[in-house]
Length: 230
Length: 230
DNA sequence: ATAGCCGGGTGGTGA
DNA sequence: TCACCACCCGGCTAT
Image (tube, rainbow over all chains, first blue to last red; front, side, top):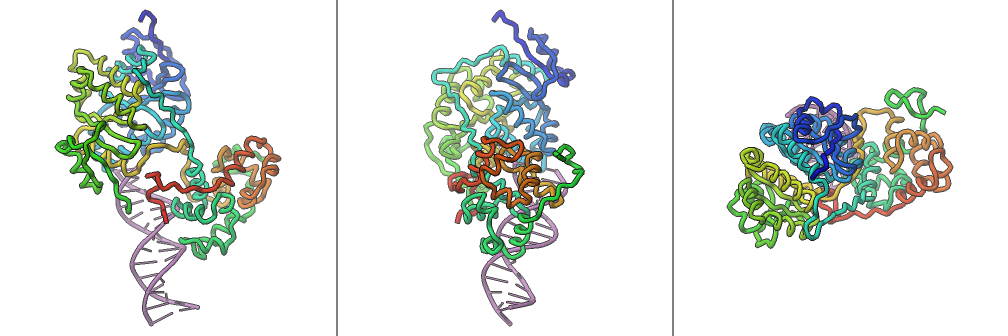
């Protein structure tokens, strides 16, 4: 392939050692300030690189899934490369299952392909290989498995209802089964609520009071400075 | 948990050590002669397990891509687990790029998700974790979804309203100002909604449709297994 | 993400 | 009816 591989790299990846290697392999590296991802291989393919330690940290801080989400929204084929010996850290971790669960969610939930490398050299090698490959020749009958991406209505309904105070997934499920729709749930009266299993006088009162509480926008919202004050 | 994880295992995987571990974790293991794949987690999800040496061998023999192809044809979410220290073997290998290329082809060409584990224990842990929470299709959501900490009533109101599809903090504020209470917001009609600044016909329609969508609890979703089904 | 603990609510039991 | 109690559920914390 006479054409030179061109890769966009986020400025913050400069010191990772990977970009120099990519250049050494013959790639054309261009630094940018990327809003999302660390390496852009094409308009459809981008890579987020994380070392194993970062991976753990960003998992616990919640940063991980946010980044995964944004990457998956911005590129059709997003990928994550975990650099370093994550598998050893898994064993040291008190909660290995949290890690497995996180990997599963990233892969199946957000549709990222996850890869593992040992060090910057392998990372660069891998990225370069993919970039050079460019288009992947689909063997025989390629599956372009397009994700239904059906942000299932059901999940959204559960989410909205369980955002009520004192209501979690279980109670939300019962409420929706009982009332049939989100609107009906939010229109229910106190006595109706109290009849639902898991709801007694106390919870029903709390919810009713909350639903009917009049909204008093405060002039200054500590965490929401940008709300309209018109 | 009332629901027991059920996993179909290929007879030839008996001696891998993984099935016993799955059983030990509380899973229900059933042995079968599987035409393709080693572990079947659902009608849509199956796993091919290979140790690092097998992976290399089957790569060079061409068997690897054939299996990947068949797995991808048979299941909507196929996955490959490579057990053992493949990454070290990569460096010893004469052609590292061949391996990276193979991984890329398996992932992007055939649509398999590839994972690495260190030993049978990790493999079992991973498979069990996936099977248990059964996350095969996913919610796509900005992950901002964590119930706020101790909040004022006003913050709770904003949170509930902004959990509506297409509604953020700003629009939630306007809705609450306009309608006065959470219940009133959720009782609003389409024309009333469309009058609010920031809402056009489209958004108003989406929200109305969502509010009135009937709740269909799916009993087939493993992720819902822990919700009451009665 | 997962697991575990805690506090409070619920709903059934028996007085 | 009411007090008691076992269990369930939601919410918080640590890893």
